[in-house]
Image (cartoon, rainbow, N blue to C red; front, side, top):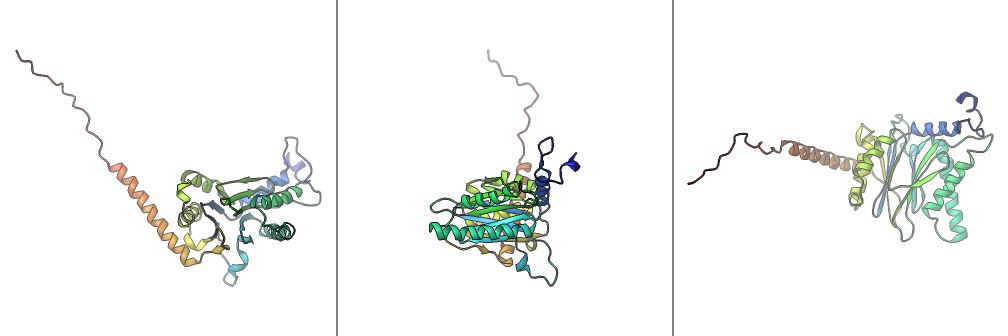
Length: 268
């Protein structure tokens, strides 16, 4: 039945589907995995870095972008579509600052991008953006914020989120390991984001790109040697967890009670 209704963006199928929007969501699922974790005073973005050609400049294929001094994002899906939305977000940040004289809030910027995405789901002669964004940043006097947008134009706030290839596996890891105490420090937040991404990235630190944004500071991209140091710490944590599990298995159980009946002495 989809063949009769997937050629036109503005036509619903009888069971209520917009197939072009669903196809855009499939494009997101085939993109590189992106993870975002909100810490107490830190936000961390981790993305899967695809293999590059020998003569290609790695600087031109980044999946993490700075939008303003206090806002950054990562994306999964079509890179060309992401470039358009990133430019629109940067222009909106500067326009808002020019007219209001205050930096944009993270939710305002997310809502603006989601509105643009939604507009392209009901316009003939256009197609939806095949992109999902993880938008993170700081509002004045408020804890860090994390939002995720979808091709349909919806957005939600998260404590930790993932998008792209195998995002369900990464999300299950975050649901199991994320807690307020687990992201108290910058290092803890980086470790949990990296471990989550390693659930689907098998080639180690060479295929990971990490960026950290702290309150009052600009977006910082971690160098490869720094990432390798965190990889060693993660390996040590995994070894300790394995030893802990072994210790639980080796704890001897209490001996079963004796089956022989006990007779008490009776004195005359």
